[in-house]
Amino acid sequence: MSGALALALPRPVRRQIWSIGGGKGGIGKSLLAASLGWQLARLGKRVVLVDADLGGANLHTCLGVPGPSRTLGDFILRRVERIEDVVVDTPFPRLRLISGASDVLGAANINYQQKVRVLSKLRGLDVDIVLIDLGAGTSHNIIDFFLISDVSLLAVVPEPTSIENGYRFIKSALYRRLRNAAPNPAVREVIDAALDQKSTQGIRTPLDLLAAVEREDPAAVARLRRELGEFHPRFIVNQVRSPADIAVGHQLVTACARHLGVRASYAGYVHYDDAVWRAVRQRRLFAEKDPDSAPALETRQIARSLVEGETLALTW
Amino acid sequence: MSAPAETHYGVLGIGPRATPEQIERAYRHAAGLYDADALATYSLLDTEEREQARERVEAAYGVLRDPSRRHHYDVALGLVSEASSPPLAAAPPPPPGTGRAPVVVLPDPVTGPDLKRFRESRGISLREIATASKVGIRYLEYIEAERKDVLPAPVYLRGFVQEYARVVGLDPRPTAESYVARVVSAR
Image (cartoon, rainbow over all chains, first blue to last red; front, side):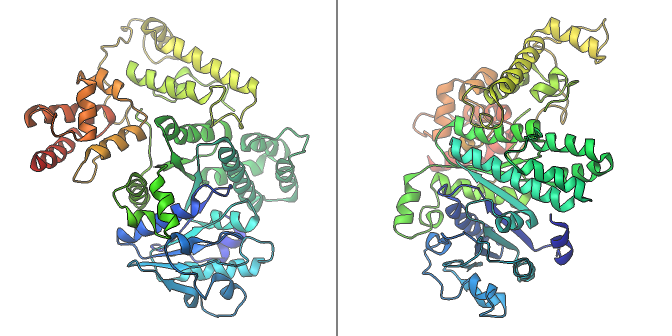
């Protein structure tokens, strides 16, 4: 977590912020967020879904709710004072929504103070779980919401472009976290070099980065290792079509551990199903429309596992 | 990247008491990870790095799958003494908590699709269950599909589901009780 943000925010014990990012657009992330929120509400949790999708806010449509007149933008731009004023009900018990339709979040025009204010007020909401749909990309605003979350979910689909972007998202988030924890400018310079794709220092992975920091400032590396150890993204593999696709989640976890030094886990997978597409066409939440479909049952399983702190693990 | 001193067990991500079955499964996972077209590594490693990783996996598997070579390797690591017997396929299973993932209890009622989802999530094929349990693959398919018209009598079905559960890492008794009770009541 960002050191400055961590100091600014109270962390109540029960209330949790979850976020779901993915780096790439068009992978069904908003549908996942809507379905997870609905399943969490069915499990008895009081949930507020927050649409933070840059330029493509449509969580309300996934839920079958008309575009709300009050949005997160109204709170950011101080058209309303209280964040509660932009929380709207959905047809579903215990599930409410902060819409981001036509809003500015994710763009460069939300400054640090605005971000701290939003995060602080989200943490203050009287709910069990705030679930933020982060939208595509790796901008600082998106990454910061991911980093402050108690549960950081990373959605991918089993396709090369999505996996590539997933890794890019992980590296961006981790390097930002490490940069925020860097104890001095010299270490920050090393991290900046790692972020620079054209750097000639040969830093390709977080493990390379730690080795470079150790050469520069041996005393600083322990702190960065601690940050790395606390960074814990959880994969959801969406739109799987075969057992091999399901296995991609396990492979991502192993690859992260062995080649990035990142302790990721596998929250679960969701099958591709035309029923989801049909539900979207009808502006219905697929999990609610067809609760016995594989995607609905699988998102229920993911919600339950996350609440209980379980992950999919290989049996050896 | 991998530490230079990583053992063959570390390369495959298993403990030194892993059974042959566990070695086989871990090898398939690791080998799949470094396939030329593997989604999880193609953008993470260049060709040379992937080849090196693959060679480490093959070297580890080559030693650990062979009881005699494994024994010599274990002796060299100081895991066993020279005089001890080589680990054979019939070696006793590892004590609870040392090898397998924790046994899981699915919420009641357990359905065929629940079993299938759990199995797939663990990356286990029906063929592997059939081999390990001696239950015919056809019956395993019937169990997952809940083919009530062709499933055997409850007394046999209970045993089959227990075997299925045991292999995939579910608690056999509650899994079988829940599944059979539901299927029998629906007949």
